[in-house]
Image 1 (tube, helix red, strand yellow):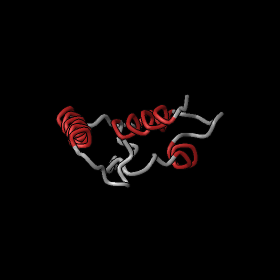
Image 2 (cartoon, one colour):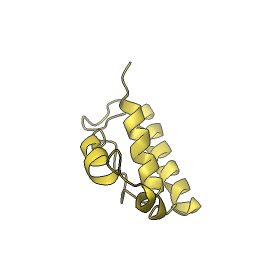
Image 3 (cartoon, rainbow, N blue to C red):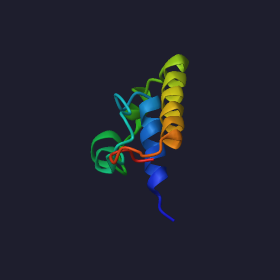
Image 4 (cartoon, rainbow, N blue to C red):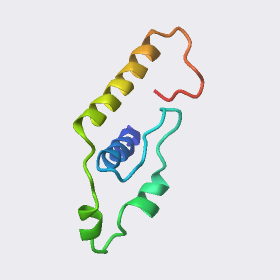
Length: 88
């Protein structure tokens, strides 16, 4: 069992609180190095600034992204041949 979806879920949660600008298309795995090195506070450091700067996206924006992801999933499941760069 891999933990691939754990880091993808973390990437999505960081998008929800506006720490990531956009999710993009599912053509590659998320950038784990960016999560650890650039976005999340280092272990043992103060997290107050990180928490206070988090801004929850509007519900409509989150719902639109959910719809987009679901549409991609539906089209991928209906397609007879998927694009090689689509990572479902």
